[in-house]
Image 1 (cartoon, rainbow over the protein chains, first blue to last red):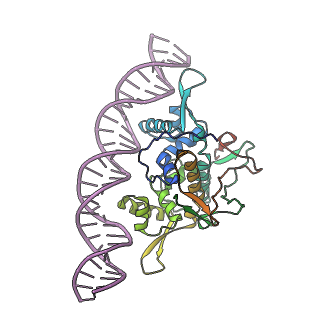
Image 2: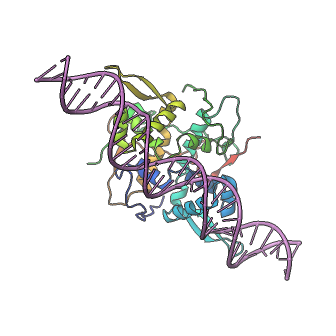
Image 3: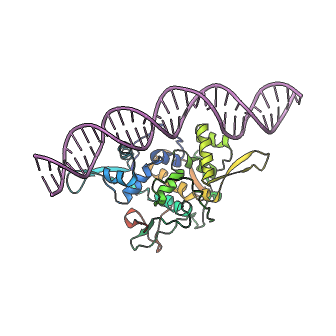
Length: 152
Length: 152
DNA sequence: CCCGATGAGTTGCGGATTGAAACCATTCTG
DNA sequence: CAGAATGGTTTCAATCCGCAACTCATCGGG
């Protein structure tokens, strides 16, 4: 889990002390996390991102640039030919738990019981179990058993 | 974990089959998740949300209404006085893992080593450990060891 | 009972962000 | 080499957002 040094991308954070707010300042718009999702699922090229997300092309240009500037994507030469491709950096790949929890919440709450949806599976085709936050001693955590400790 | 029936809030999903996209259709804007974050940390009233997030008031009005319509917040009479207050529903509280993973990503990647930030702690004041997605047999999961299985 | 202070919005408006579509320069491909 | 695909850029209209001012109801004193 290498630590990428921040490129001071935003001079003015929405809430400089809150890690949640900082993360959302980087990927909390309508499209960035869908681009990341598709990158995790194998998308590499401009056209492929555009096809999968349906995002407008000028906006995609902007998002790819921003995500690259923030250090979540990197551009490198494609293995075949001399075209460029976008790949996730370590920091970008590290958004996996975020995408996963968004996915699992959606599965639980954004589908009617009758509806079907795609599923995330591991190498053996077994569905990924639901994530459950636990404390150091293994007990389940939720809103009621945790609180934010202000930096001082 | 009670299942709230969807209120068919969005007639047109960005990507109807993908749980990630559906979740982002509900809370994937600039402010909704920060409102949820503050609700989890005890905010109840319009003014309190406004003060904590710094969001414009007309936008806050809109977000509170939408989140209520989507079933993530509910309005009920405040215990003291007859004023109304906004509280998280079960579905809203269930976003805890999402907020937590956003927070943990931010802690890892959105702060320079020298910077300090607020921390999430449990009842005993012990920092919440980092979430690690695992498969059914307990092995660590990431982008390389999972893939989306299309619904068919 | 009247005054000022809050709380909870609503309205109007200018500026920023998006989306759709057309256009353009390279690079492949047959 | 012609035509298609890739990876954008430009233009323009529509939408969204932030700010400030305004409203309306309630509340707490004096």
